[in-house]
Image 1 (tube, rainbow, N blue to C red):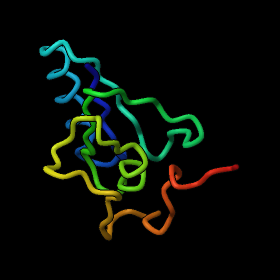
Image 2 (image 1 turned 180 degrees about the vertical axis):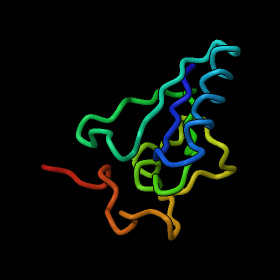
Image 3 (image 1 turned 120 degrees about the vertical axis):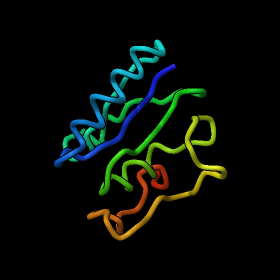
Image 4 (image 1 turned 90 degrees about the vertical axis):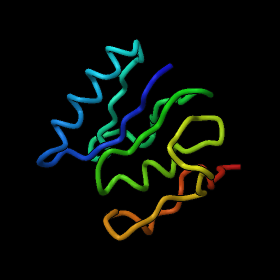
Length: 102
C-alpha cells in the first residue's frame, strides 16, 4: 500500500509532510509525495487499487482531479468527478483523462 500525498509547498506544509512521512513509516506504508507545482503532468504516477490519495494543501485540486479513480482510497464518501474550489490557480483546465488523441 502506498500513500500518494499531493501538496504545494508553502509555510506549514513542510510540517505536514514530515508528519505524514513519519506516520507512513510507523504503519509500513510507502510514502509518495507529489508536489503539484513541479510534477511532470505528462508522466504522472500510476495509482493502483487500494492505494491512498490525499491532498494536504490548497491549490492542488486540478492534480487531485486527474489522479482520482474509483479504485483508490480517499476520504470522500462518494468520489467526485472533479475537485474544485476557488483556491486552485488552474481550476479552469480540463482533466487530462477526458482527452483522446484517436
